[in-house]
Structure formats: structure tokens, C-alpha cells
Length: 332
Image (cartoon, rainbow, N blue to C red):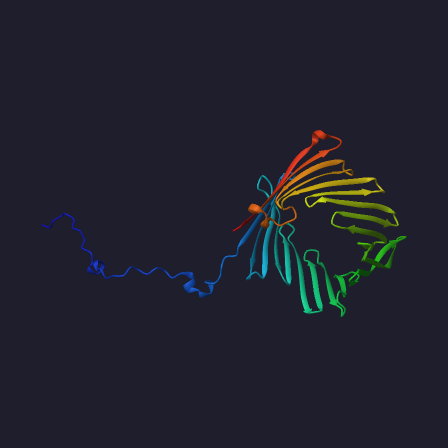
């Protein structure tokens, strides 16, 4: 009778051999596809900004692609309920830029091509509206001079613009309604600037209105009077630099008697205090910036900027509001 007790299985001598090699690991993707070895994941830049007044977050995610030849960006808003709104995707390169609005299902395409060192072609197209503009700009022989011809697409009147060191002049034909009849006229717009009396004189002519402006500025003082014709509206701006960190700005409109004033004081590069009053809205305010107000977030400490603002209505001080904004960037 056979022995019913179980017997242990004897391993195969081949499995017991001390000279047997372990199984080799699977090949890496880079060994299978050598072209992937030199590719790195694009660095992501994430920027988020919160505004306590609107209670909205504005977010941007961007990265550079194609060896830094182009930039891809996603932007959107979201509220406290995490609802996403106004999503947009953009692609930007030297010659072509595309902005796509997800909610509107519309795209704006812009292209710039340098045909020669002195000739540039530009095109702008609204896909949903089927409208756009084409332009050609040629640099003339004299430095600082150029001629630009542009026209709306598919219909519209062309515009010619001559640019020169002292300003530019544009000429365009357009239609106006007079006594229930349409009439074609030639519209001329332009701006001229010239140094005079230690300042800059400028004349801006647009839509049959002439705006004359003189700006005087030195290390401690700025004075900028302005007059508009034919309305004869006069205003002036005055700025006084008391020290490298203290500055006062004042603006007054003689036509409406409206005025505003702003005092600014900086503490180093990353702290700024501002206070002012605006008679048009009868509102006093004060704000404190932590981080360079005019600089980019990446240059500030911790890549973050914070603004606190207090608004005090003159007619009802009890409705004063304290608001803040925070902007932060992450490099991933």
C-alpha cells in the first residue's frame, strides 16, 4: 500500500544552480525610443490671483514648448463654489498667435510675417464674426519713417498711416449719416510731439477734436497742462517728488471742477503705501502693496504680491470697505 503522507516536491536542479542569472529588467522607453532621451517636460508656470471684491480667482497655467519657440497658456476664472468661467486657451509664437474662447467657441488668429528687412505683413481674423484686418508696413529709406496700409476684411475702407520721428498721421475714408443720407468723407487723425522749453509739446487730433498738451518734467517736479478744442476743456496735472521715496500727484479739471490727489511712499522695493481722494466719485482710499506693484510676480519675494485697500465714501463713512488682492506664482 502506498504511503498516503504528502511528499515535498524536489526543485529542479536547474533552478538550484548558483550560476543562474536573474531575469533582465524590461527595456526603458529611452532605450526603445532614443529620440525621447533628450526631451524634458516643459516647466509649468501657475499663477493665481484672488480679488476679495469680486470673490473670484483668476488662474493662469502656461508653459513654453518647441524648445522655447512658442508659449501655451490656459486661463480661467472660478468662484468659491469652484465653478469655472471664461476659459481661454492661447498659443503664442513669433509669427502666429491664436486665442480660443471656450465659452464663445470663437478664435482670434493673428499673424506677422517679415517679407524683407523693410517690409512686414500683419493679419488679424475673428473666426466667428468672419471679420479681420490685413496690414502692410514698409520702412522708408530715412530712419524713423514708415508707411502702413491697412484694410478691414471682408469689407471696409482702407487706412494709410505715415509714421515719422515727430509722430504719425492717418488718413481714412468713411461714411457718415447726414440728413438721412450717407456721405463719404476723408477722416484725418494724427499726433505730433516735439521738445520745447525743457518739456514735450504734443498735439492729438482725432474725430475733429484737437487736444494740446505740454509736459514739463525734471527730477523733482512735473507740470502737465492740457486743453481740448473746440470744447475749450482745460485741465492740468501736477506731480512733486519730495524725496526718492515720497511723491504727490494732483489733477484738476477746470471745466467740471473735478479733482483728484494721490500721495505715494515707498519702503524699499517691495513695499508701497498710497492714499488719495477722487471728487468725481466722492471717495477717499488708501492702499498698501507688499511686493513690487509694477513688477512681475517672479521678481518678488516668495513670488507673491498682496494689496490691501480701504475705500471710504465721503457721503456714508459707515459703508467703508476693506478689500485685498493676492497674486501668487508657482514654478513646477
